[in-house]
Length: 430
Image (cartoon, rainbow, N blue to C red):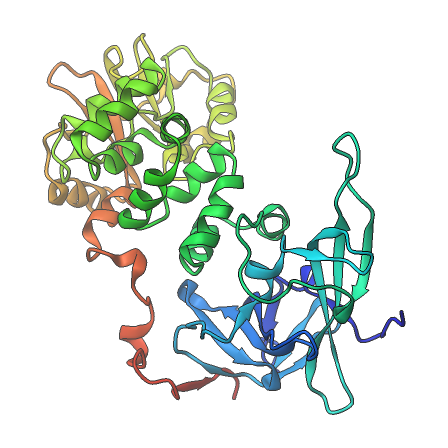
């Protein structure tokens, strides 16, 4: 088999930045659209799917791609801003062909783990090679990896029942949860569940938090109840409570009963509050420290990668116990204050507590006003006896202030007025 110097493996360009001729970034390549026509015609590359500002995915014909050398994808700079909608005759090479089971020349089967495309003399692009891992024969060992020409394998066309997602997820490994959630929304229901099945519980929990409620309910509804409970336990308690609130009371109670008691306790408490109140929006897992903790200890806590930036913006200082609801709430220490004082300083010596913090029944509007008035990104929620119950972060407030279904909307359609016009284009360079 000859190897063309112009051959480009798709795993090397997925996620790469797409630039216009002036060097300005247009977006990121998320997939390659191909036409798998028949066993005698090699799959033709029709274009690429580019994720542009606002996480909208648009289609860019391959004729407008001028270079894919060295991982830099250069375009003519002309982008159709209409959201990409896959046609029946189109196949997404990354999302649909990776992990496909194909038949090899010797009659055995293997799994597609990569594909390559190359340009012919007429400057048309085609899928030229298929990278395949043969099935292991003994003791669960992986089979040999080989790169075959496109016509040496059979089974690229049609739809496969029970297709895996291991190699597809490898291309998504470095995606933020919100971007992976956006990618899942673009898949058909069958392929989406194949991906969900192979995500670990923690990663799936992060993705669920970024999906619209109807997609959350759909995915949770097809999971085994034990796994659904495990995923809920990995979610932030406020997000888990919001999701359970969308289910029937019987289903919600079944899942709560399957969760670890201490995880279920936080979620049950949040379910008692009205949705658009401080109690309904708060998380029960802020960063809490006793007053005799040092600033060095506080900085170590906020550096933990699983803590979101809004929660890491301040330390909540309380008397024991430190789990919510805590002992007496003494005040907060802002992140900037941690950087201004010597590391040996005690957090109890620099607390701020001169604001009338919201109660759990405080309205959404009241919480939003406090965040705006005091230029904060999070607020403690306390009860009438000055016990810390949780914290409300600005992302939870925005989630309730934005129009219903905002995660599903085309974020740019209102701005460019082009959602219904398939021919609307933007030239990204002068």
